[in-house]
Image (cartoon, rainbow, N blue to C red; front, side, top):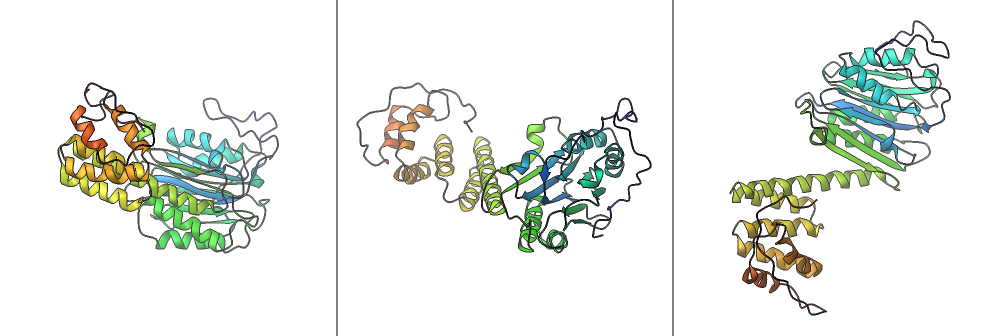
Length: 364
């Protein structure tokens, strides 16, 4: 469905008074719509992966730090994009209503009824079942509109203040045709929207938020991606780079976990994949070397230490300091073998004697 017709038809049956006396007890209060003062004109996508249940929001705008305003998501609950002359409270209040059991359509409908400035809002919601609801107010700045996936596709794209009216259809097409996980597909939608013309003012910031389909009760573990580009001439391109880096660091963590379980072959596969994703990140090679050394793979570890130390000798200076917190299992002789693969130091200084401690998690 395209244009400014809501994806789920939401009937506004009454208008609340200025005091919003119609707000029901025990329910989220009305949006703070005293004046539409935050113009976040943008294009975005809310979506749910039908295979994994993961949900998320991706957005780009010529607006500083759009990630702090537009995208909202909670594992096991849903996702919200609130934009145009934005009322931020649609995000947390929409999630609260969906958490209480309301569908995306019911949650959005209830909040719209309470908002006297709904005609300038653009909001999309998706719940944990993949049901989508969206609203493009008739006073949103042209070109503005939305398109939703058909039953089972579980997504909505929406845009306002665009260069032309092909932006959101291009986003929908890209999302449908792109393979990969939810992050890949939503990024493809942003790229397509920008290629079609994007925000008439240009580019400035972008964000990606993806959460798990089922809550673990530990929000920090349920956020699969929570990345922002606050101010950049090519924010979507930079957002893609950050996603690639996050994937690389996750592979490194998987390698460390495999080493801890004595699964050397699996660890090397994870480490190799991480290095391939981010070959310019020296630190990935360094912690790989540390993990391999701790696992008794000294030959492989020394080769990697040598590469890292050649790039930046500060890593060689750091290495002895890892012994005390238990991040490196090395006595004085082992430290000497590691130091031997480093280039000569500009200033003399040796490793201090430090006791070997038990393993503790490495710093991030």
